[in-house]
Length: 245
Image 1 (cartoon, helix red, strand yellow):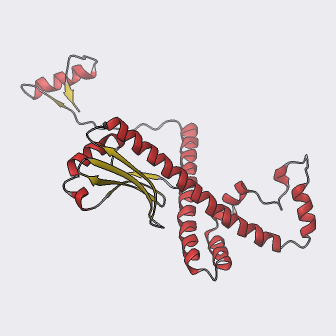
Image 2 (cartoon, rainbow, N blue to C red):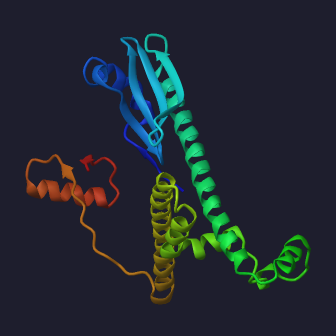
């Protein structure tokens, strides 16, 4: 799934508007968050009106508009609106990803069905119920095995897209771009999970490795010896010693 990139924190949006409404925001809207193909724009509607707009940056379509009178609203209300807008972008983006994945999966199913010599037998197997372990039915596709198997084969997936969108150059490029980004993201997550699992296994087998860490702190003192004594007292638990980290 696509990730949320936030450039201005929710609680800072109203303050940012009042600070930049007569400079940057008077010239153009500013992106304050992104999620997949969706961007959340902070804009100046008027001197005292803050606008939040969700736009699909791929189609340039405006999805949602909301305004606030800065003289009658609060940072909490604007922050809530930003949070809801980010949730909306996440839902829209995840929906787009799932629809595109499903479309590629359908092409895989079509390709798979064309290779079956007895489609009637396959159809009967699909609509009938069996108490046998589903994992034993190797010839039946399912979404989970597809996402972690055939779909992650980038070469095969791109070849499939080229095959079924051969006469649709616009959508072919969109699907190729989507597949590359989606598969790279899924693969990076799998690699991260694998690395964490391997690190945990090594820790259990070899024990926890100790490292040396250095911390920089500041303490007020009349001289170096006084400062060293104060730090030692602080490390010993004397909470009367005040330091700056």
